[in-house]
Amino acid sequence: MTDSAGPQTTGADSDGSPFILAQDLSKTYQQGRLQVEALRGVNLAIPAGAFVVILGPSGGGKTTLLNLIGGISRPSGGSLVVGGLALDRVKRATTVRYRREQVGFVFQFFNLLPALSACDNVALTLLARGVGWREACQRSRHVLCELGMGDRLDHRPVELSGGEQQRVAIARAVVGKPRLLLADEPTGNLDAESATQTAELLQRLHHQGSLTCLLATHNEQFCRFATTVYEIRSGVVFLQGDSR
Amino acid sequence: MRAIVLFRLVWKDLVHDRLRSVLSLALLSVLVTLFLLVTALARALQTFGSDEGTPANNLWIISANVIDPGHSSLYQETLDQAAADVRANYGPDSVTAASPVIFRYLRVADRLMQILAVPPADAESVHHLELLDGHWPRTTSQAAVSRSAMSLLDASIGEQVEVYGRPFSIVALFEPPSAQAVSIGMTYAAGQNLLGTGHGFQIGVLQLSPQSDVPAVQSWLEQTPNLAGRYSVYQARQVTRNLTRILEATAVLGRVFQMLALLVVTFGSLNAASLFVLERQRDINTLYAIGYSTSTVQTVLLIRTCILSLAAFLPGWAVASLLLAPHQGGAVVFSSAIVPVVSGATTASAAALVVMAAGAGAWFAGRQPQAPS
Ligand SMILES: Nc1ncnc2c1ncn2[C@@H]1O[C@H](COP(=O)(O)OP(=O)(O)O)[C@@H](O)[C@H]1O
Ligand SMILES: [Mg+2]
Image (tube, rainbow over all chains, first blue to last red; front, side, top):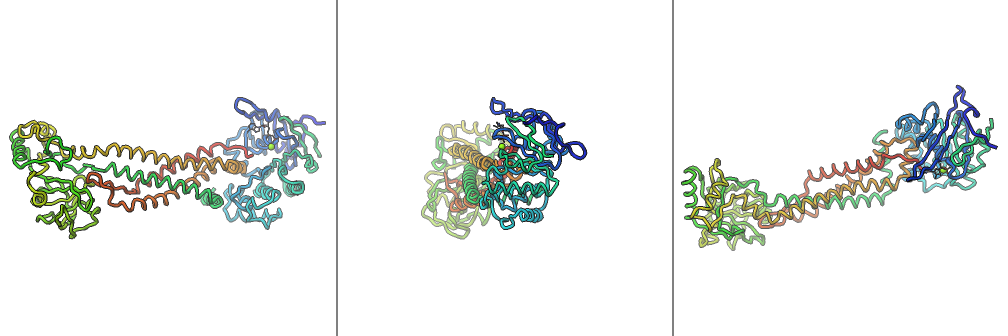
């Protein structure tokens, strides 16, 4: 069965400290007068280069956890350090830079901008970093071609299938060569075949670089790719298996 | 991030969402047109019958109890006596001139116009009629035409105008103290010729020396046996004011409508910004997630709203000008023209306000980053 995951129980980075370290992490949403405890006392230690699957039912707290690690929202309690950056304490401008330069996000509903072509959507990441339009497009095209989307560069999201949209979204996430890839139910909205392709694509990208991947899903299929599997239920995280 | 990049992103979005962009633009344009028209009218009403140029040291003697000076009748003896009375009481230098004015409202070329017949020597020095072009009428068949009358008649110096069935040749363009007044000036003799001398003249003007205590002389003079009960004495400005008071309420309403129209334009712009944000919250949250800062997103929103609002000023301005074009001469009320014009300054300040509203909208909307769904 599972046991509670603590920093002492998981692998560490080469210099001894894990890439992601969460200690007693909690997140409470205020919903009117109601308090929703989405995360409770979460402890995680994830080494750089890991492929982590976070498994859990809907409402378990997966999205909340990824949003904290991705610097989109702030913890209510505990500490969270990613790549040496204390996300529970840093200034907002620092989180913006962290998101921009270190994190790639993949969402369940792709979240592509409808007005922009596939290429422009990918370029958004680079444009945010101040890369010029021309260069951003060039690099985006290159990445899209690598992901087999070379003939879809100028298509708008509505002109693409779900699987293709997700590939564009993945390209957008990795074009800036982030250290951390966060995928929140990336196949939740795809048919079985596209889901498998997407999963394999993510695994391929993970193998290619020194990317640390966190993938949240309720689909146990993904566990075969994982170096580490955590389970999350009602805001509590358990270590389920570590392949190393 | 470079502004040009943001601009390009906004542009792609506007083009992608053509229908919505055009609809927003159309709505804002209508609001801008409305604002410019209402402003033009409000301005025109405010300047209506403005007596800025009316000399403060002129006293008007007219029949008691008339509102329209055209109904007044006065004779030379009464005016001379009044001048003598003031000199006797306030010193020989207290009155610098006494001049009669024949004054009527007549229909000229189907418009209500003022006829002013004054001794030519007094036209400028006493009555402050300012000659803009040509020379003052010398004969009984010559006329001077005020600027607004000239544009209503669509005439120019050298042409003829028929007044009360008699042709006059236009020899002068002038501006009366109340600049919008639609007036035709002529010599005193021409006025007598045209309108007959049975009623004497209408307004007796006493020009007091600049040092005079005008209100004191005014109330004293009204009590003299010469005038008491039969004639009223006004400061020249009061007469114009009595006439224009009728329009004051309208002018106030005009100003209120102007403010309202400005608010409507401003909130229209604000509304366009916040509706857009509501509609695109998801995209905006995505931008936050992939590393765009609050201020960048706010700038994007600002650029978008500014483009739409400012673009609306062009068609808005064009339509307003087009609608006003047939009314260049303005509407004439009590022989004073109401001339609505689309003013550049108003347009510019309204545009500035709209941009500020757009800025506020963008700031409020972009201030709260949320997790994307
Ligand atoms: N913005 C929010 N406001 C209030 N409650 C929220 C919010 N986001 C998530 N929750 C709640 O927190 C819990 C965990 O949600 P979430 O992290 O989205 O779970 P999962 O992604 O595993 O489905 C759920 O009970 C959910 O209702
Ligand atoms: Mg979720």
